[in-house]
Image (cartoon, rainbow, N blue to C red; front, side):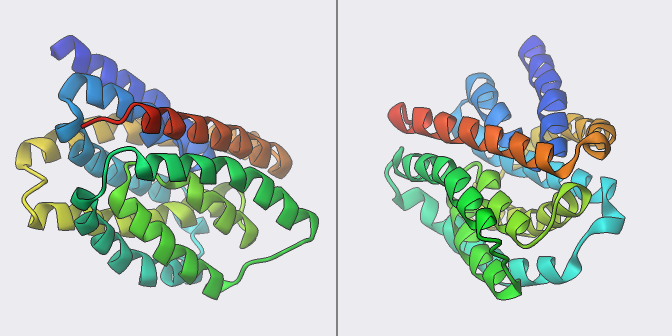
Length: 245
């Protein structure tokens, strides 16, 4: 177990770096390893705590570039929706959410490009609507980071402002999810401790990523996000085909 935990920490460093560059991908990379080491029942709450630290580290790395109006609009609906989603989690059959999200991730690549070609811009009300939908899904699923990406990008954010603002909104949503899990008795202290340890390696990776983000131009940044959206969609479809119970 000690060796396996060390490999999880190393993977957390890599996943934190990737997530720190594009704003998502940390959970997608870590979750299979957590399931193998700790089992699916314990992996979900551990990842919830690690996700809180991942988003907090991105906020810390880009604190001065947070768009607080966008955060407020997104969080106002996202926080209660996440709590509702977490309570809904136990009533759903395995594989359904993963399949829907996988198709959604891949389709959003085309949707985002179509909207950009027509110079569509989203406003604060659009982010509030996205917060409600994504917040609910975040309460149910392990990873919804790729869903957030098109909404914040089409709001007009890239690089540091995107990473910090999306992370701050996600941080509020994941806190609501973790508190709901804790209230329902699904977040024991042992899982919190493991999540904090794994989250520490993700935090280091997030600060490593800052140098690379500064060197990326906006177009390459968007291309990199599209590539990870495709990967995320394929991973979720694979999980749907082989659901964990």
